Image 1 (cartoon, helix red, strand yellow):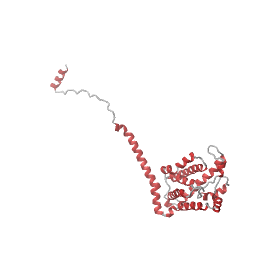
Image 2 (cartoon, rainbow, N blue to C red):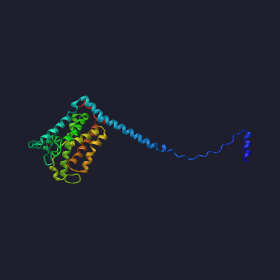
Image 3 (tube, one colour):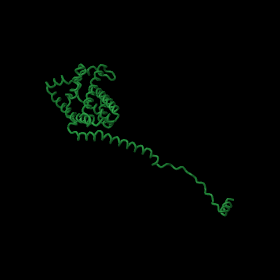
Image 4 (cartoon, rainbow, N blue to C red):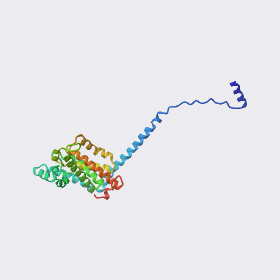
Length: 270
């Protein structure tokens, strides 16, 4: 019957109908399944690369150009700060010099507040007597030099003083609060509170905030935060306060200017 129908269609010139095609599901190639993940990874790599290049320009290239343009005056604060630390450290080695340094720069929780306010600026340059001054000089110089090139001279001085004073005043509050969760024991009032560490970490945090530089923050600020929580003491608590104030000041600065960076220091005070 079927062969007769076929022969009839052939005689009539009609084409024989083709058998129905059977479609079988085909598994997607491995490359297609991984395509979305690879694209996401490439987008993240491009995003990371762009931000690293931007941060490198903001933290390295632009300050280097400013240094070439302005010369030694562009890092004058760093030179003076380093020289002051070395000079006061040398003076502090003699009995008479130690008395002079103590009366003019030592800050403690049991000293009256007006005296603390007078001594705080000089206390920034007095390292601990049991520590060598030289190892901290490169970090101090780099921090202050970068701050002056990025922020300008006036803002560098104001931020350094503000974060240091905030740490000193917060220590008095924590001592008054007592040895609670975030307080300090009464004997902390007798600890000599000098040195530039709070100003240094505060300046790094401020620069990282106004320049949107997470790598700088990770390298220069995060280790200090970790140490402060691992070994809580007076200095560690003050560093946390200094970092917090520096970041807040940076956020206020970027919000006020409407930009992620401050104006070119060449057009600001130097």
